[in-house]
Length: 208
Image (cartoon, rainbow, N blue to C red; front, side, top):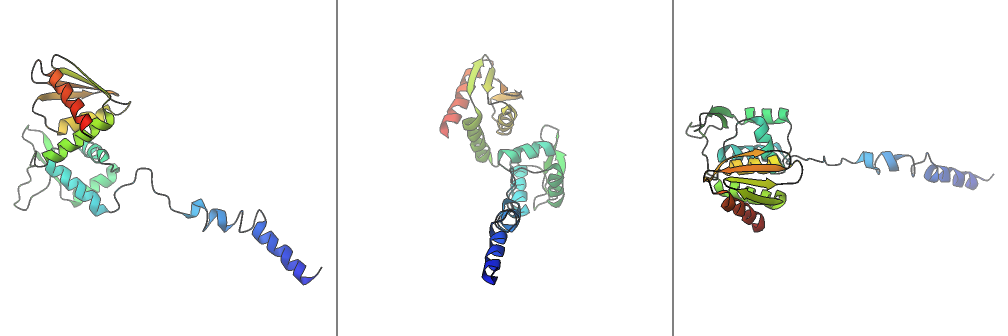
């Protein structure tokens, strides 16, 4: 066999064989294949810790947050997925403390420049209203009323997200909410206010 033929056969084995670079070597599992590339997580957090913590600060200043799980749900509404351990570290680094809210319950707050840690409820009401409208557009399926009770239907597993957005929007006409898997019951202060409130939710859904 001539030297040129040896080289040709060797090259074919390296480039085209099952164990060569083309099929089973670096092309699949190394530089050129999927395992060699970092793929983003399905529930990606913000690009930086600074961005995530800025969002946490905005939420704590805008509304009452009573627990870390509640804060995690609020972040999830904004598309920010975070673990409990990471959230705990963020709160410590931000200097968050728990104080008495206006209703007497403990809520998370940040010390302001003047040393007053009391949350300023409603300072970002427009943001809260916009979030509620967005969630209504995305999750509200139907809205029906009877007396002072409004029944909102959502896709399976989404009721709690919508109820949380309603609670944090601090609508004066609403006494409270109860969430199941795909149903939210809203109770109005007015004994006959259910129909008007149901129409309000439908209007919010149509705004987006």
